[in-house]
Length: 525
Image: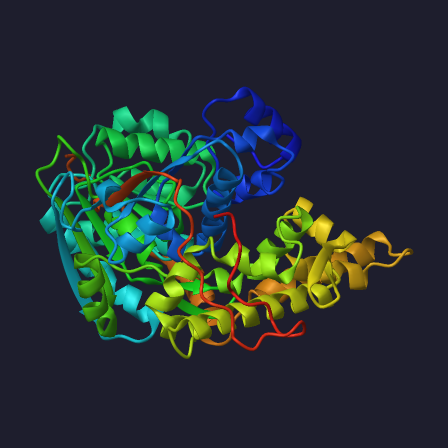
């Protein structure tokens, strides 16, 4: 398993026969594939969660797969690609991109699962997010009571503070029904050793009544104790932050999603969960051999109800976002001499998933048309703009308006996996006599440029204070009574990547030495 430190990863790559890596780790390691024989010798590439190509990690994933196919075309070693994903509306495009024939493509409908899933969607016409979460608390409680009975349940919430508040709310509602320990399915003495490992007071209190919560702020011992209690069935309900859905190993019969928006500090606003995150959370309601059906209750803003009804019951399409993050990847290819001129840059794009989708969905990529000329002009403009940005940042140099070569800043950015905008800021700000204080100020300014200030206006500032006070006050109001104890299926395709990119568009008829490079290439095929 790659760790991200280049020297260590190279040793692991040399010794290992099976390499496990994130797209970013393999991107960093495979950039210098011409000097690394072990990268060239990879004969099987298994890509899990292929539908994430339309998400945040998508551009890196797209570049990695494109590079591995390109390496295969340049060497004698053929590579087989096995891609796994959820059901997709345009699975055929992805399959053709990785060189898979229709015989190797298996695209199952979204309702084909190891355990059938019942989905219940409820909309709430409350625009203010904190108020909407407050309105969803009791429905979430009744969802657990009515749908889970005594089976495990997982409740996903937007934030760590909300996880604590929701756990307290569930306990409050249980106490109001005179069944405070209805979610506890073990004797208090049996869970006592686990409670000794809990330092968080609110968590220890709710755990004693069969309700737990998980978020990144808890220690490793606390998280392990919560997972052990829930997996054993002693604790029926666990409230989890949505950001932990990808690393969560717990499964349950019932999953409840309390709202589908979270606050994004970098954008200073509430944003929707990616549809892939929602599918991942829903997938936790799957216990083969234990349940006949899984259940999911989705609580959302009323205007989004129809949207989720469509995309949760039908396969959804994925699109490329490589054009928004192209500069950093193109800089890396210039450094490794894969791109030595503008025509090479155009050829480089023909290996991408974006290239295949340009003509399939031209409006999404701001193309004026789907003809060869439109495609050629678009790629030429994209290459010109990207290389101009890199040249302005002093990462590359463009000679004779065609040939490109790397500069020191570009080499540093590529080697240390730094964005070209960051290295540009460092280069313009650092001076020979810069002191430690100045270095910290430069780093802080770069951090601020991405995340700005974490404080937000009006509602969010009020919300944070209210949530903190409310959590404390709710716990103080609780009286300890002596109550009684008591995958979405997917697409997978397998191929030996021997096929080349699709035929490239024709050059514009009027092309001079100073015009942008055409999209016709004498590429690797």
